[in-house]
Length: 260
Image (cartoon, rainbow, N blue to C red; front, side):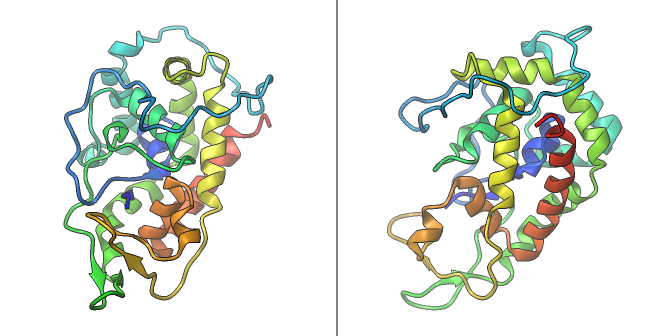
């Protein structure tokens, strides 16, 4: 089972300059060294979505003036986020290939799988916590505490200022999205779609049953296991954490989807 993101979109947004996704990390495997460039793996990744012929959610105020090349964008983007968030947030994120990682994460959140090697977030601390014995394990009540620090960072974000950073660097997000195999796609449309998918994650109360067919846990309910990678992350982080993330995602959506 996969971990938590930017909230797939909250964390993705947070680190990407306008997207807070959320979506997040894997529990069982440590993250690999951040690669200088991320490309979609045709074997592991789902097919690209069909791109509409027109832009649904155009961003206003976008200009390429004064922007660095995508390969040199980490330092200026991190500086802009430091000015907005302080430096505490850096403890949770990988500092290299930031824009490419955010774009790949956002693109994969609504899909079936979120490859570990595209995540901009560091591994959630400690092991996944379960409860129950024998063949009927459930997500442990203390598991949600593992995500508390991530969620607190997301909840404290000034959505308007974060989106301003996103708009400032948007041409680079667009370029990274086109590199993934979307030459006619518009990244902000994909961002809005990812946020909408996360907001549609069910709010579940009570024990959530698990199965462990191999190494990783899965949801015992086939309907839950069939949901997108982003929605499963939202479920996994716990109802209260998910509610805080959804609230911030809603604020961000209002700002990035006004052109739709």
